[in-house]
Image 1: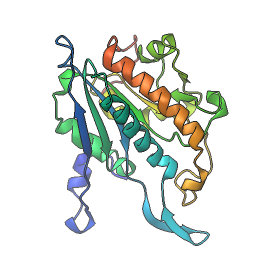
Image 2: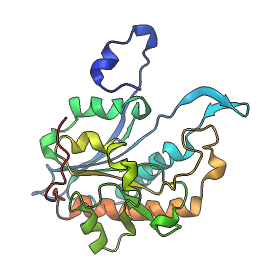
Image 3: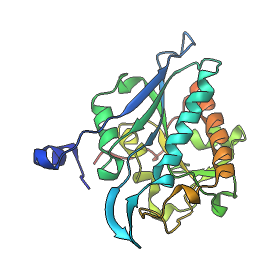
Image 4: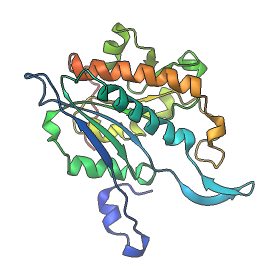
Length: 245
């Protein structure tokens, strides 16, 4: 796993591969807000072919993070049906998360809109299975919930997303959102990861996906996305913004 873009540059060409971020945009419709940008994202890469476990060497990543990619696509589908968002919305699936969040790091170095226009980012990662700690089927939790006003905004709107029940796991710092957060943009990750044993194993397969649960989370994510696209912009709470390292 690479800890910086600089480390990537030091690799020999034989050890490098080309990956792509895939991006879609819906332009904002409100004259006062259309130049503000909200990003909804998930990473599409996983571990590929690796050490066999019980004869299986294909690390599918159904939960991590095909479930998040599917949810972002469903948010995009819902927005495409209208009404047009007030803010400009970017839908992005990124590469290289499992190798040091490389795709998102590349994006902040080459954004399609200036980062100064970004007001929020919501990452979606591992929402394929229900978590009793979040309330069960159709419910999710959000990392860094109290770091910004985003959590309170969603709660006030009745969106079934609660605070991360696993603060000791430091999930806020372990997904693509942290790259945006370190740039001063309120950014959090939506998840329902229940600490299952299939994490980064070949057994993270589609047979383990609870589609009824995922549908509920996708609906909640669409509601959350609408709030971020059309409502007040979230801001950091006192002491909530992570400091640049």
